[in-house]
Amino acid sequence: MTTLIRVIGYLIIIFAILALMNGLKKYTRLAFVHELAKYHYTFGGLAVLLALSHIILNIVSTSLSITGLIVALLVVITGSIGGTMKQTQNYALLSLHKACIGLTLIALIVHIIL
Image 1 (cartoon, helix red, strand yellow):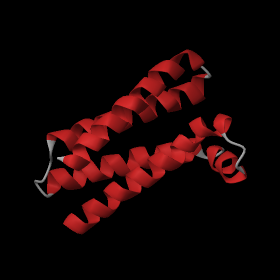
Image 2 (cartoon, one colour):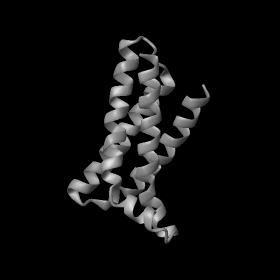
Image 3 (cartoon, helix red, strand yellow):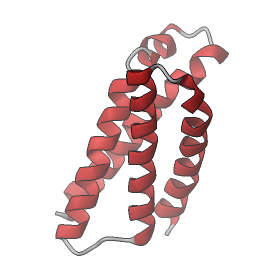
Image 4 (cartoon, one colour):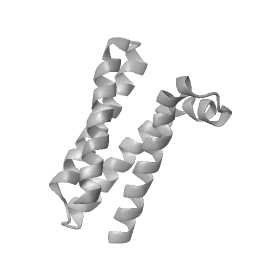
């Protein structure tokens, strides 16, 4: 079970990095970055679903950590804000979405270190 939890954790990081390509597209002309950015909603959604499964598996295996719980909640909040923006076209939420991304990255680094 520990191996599965770890693999899902790495997949969350991979999909989050792929979702972050959307923010990089205005700073580069690399074609693959622009291509990946088209799917950032999908990558972000997969990161959210994997974060939920990751936290459930940690609860079931009684290996839940507070830092992991914080990261998972931040990933879900970030994805929820992003999904809300897409559905409602309310881009006033963009600053909040970006702030949550920053907090999530900081919390993720702390979670990996601890």
